[in-house]
Amino acid sequence: MALLDILHFPDPRLRLKAVPVVTVDADVRAIVSDMLETMYDALGIGLAATQVNIQQQIIVIDVSSEKDAPICLINPVIRTLEGSEEMQEGCLSVPGYFENVTRAERIVVEALDENGAKQEIAADELLAVCIQHEMDHLEGKLFVDYLSPLKRQRIKKKLEKTPSSKSPSNDDSHSSAS
Ligand code: NI
Image (cartoon, rainbow, N blue to C red; front, side):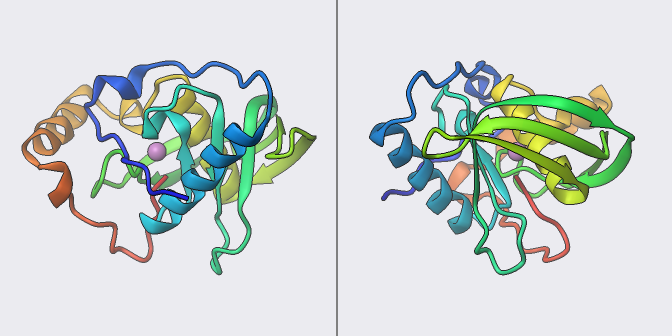
């Protein structure tokens, strides 16, 4: 197990598109395990492989309050999207910023789990938002892309001035970053 470095906006590597995992093998399971450790260490609720500079379609999520319900989505595909909901989002790659984003309220997603078994997850509320946020990462998209260009530019300038090691920590217990 190892902690992985999380890329920060506006790092151009966050714009790379992830490719599907061909075989869910021991190497992939090692990535999943490192990603979970990295996500929990950073107090996040979700992490996409793109954020740790691995261009494979791998996502880990845990929206439980006890942090004991990890979910792993490999090669996720959205089957249905319903409704719309605005929720405040944060991102481990955009530390210290929380903004409202509108996304589908309910989704059904199909993916492989860490053993390569097919799973279908029906999600709403925070889990639905988190899955959509992480799937965006795999496409090279960030939640700041939903904000006005002016707001995005302001965040970019501030983060460019912040050395990675001194990033503001996510200490707001009411907000969660992914
Ligand atoms: Ni994120």
